[in-house]
Figure 1 (cartoon, rainbow, N blue to C red):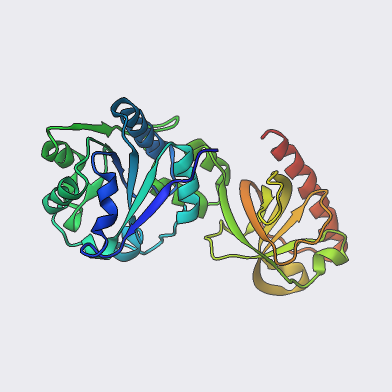
Figure 2: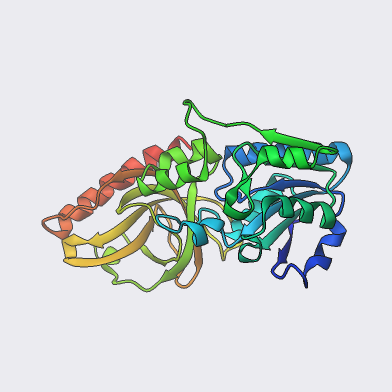
Length: 316
């Protein structure tokens, strides 16, 4: 695997500008790139092709925190943390990731932002999506970038959709997760929606009925309560093989517990992963959380869930 994207954080526009000098005359791809869906991939692919023609580095420019966290935080959550974004950008051919402190630039007029990019980065090419907006009040458009940088190559990538006229967007990805339609996520991104966390001590109820589960503590946004077929990776172990699993999100009504938990049963796995890091990749929702009359009924249904999960995961 190629070297990871080098990341530069521009927190102070006056003090940190020296970090940009090495990136002058590069090809720029500008956007939030949250979710890194197929629209983002096309932008980065076009930028990569341009960078190869010009024999110059490819620089992805993004913003920290995500602008919506400040401007429209309602119903918002991050799809791709910075660490995951770096890995995906590496796969897509970017050489650098520049993250601007959004509060420091949010009130800059869009023409000033273009002037800033011209003076401090002097790009040889730029690639953006057709719906990219920037500058104070998000008044700047992709066409404004093309007009300002008329002396260099500017590529505007059009709408990308899958089996419909609805464009693939980060908002569509969030809607998909909120609705629990995790099986649609790969169609838009080429990847499963995943969350990372740490295995912590639970109540041990799964072990008592023959299905020991890993209880996960995470800060990631979770799909709706229910049972899901999933793959997991044990991140602290050298082997990064994806293991088949069944995941439960929500309370445990059979045991009269209203505490929301994230639990994973790894099919056919034996081992101690307490306090280890884990990644859960959601493949498909199987059912709602249900209350059973007794643990034996629950045990029977869990076995059915496992068989259904095996069938679902076999197709992947």
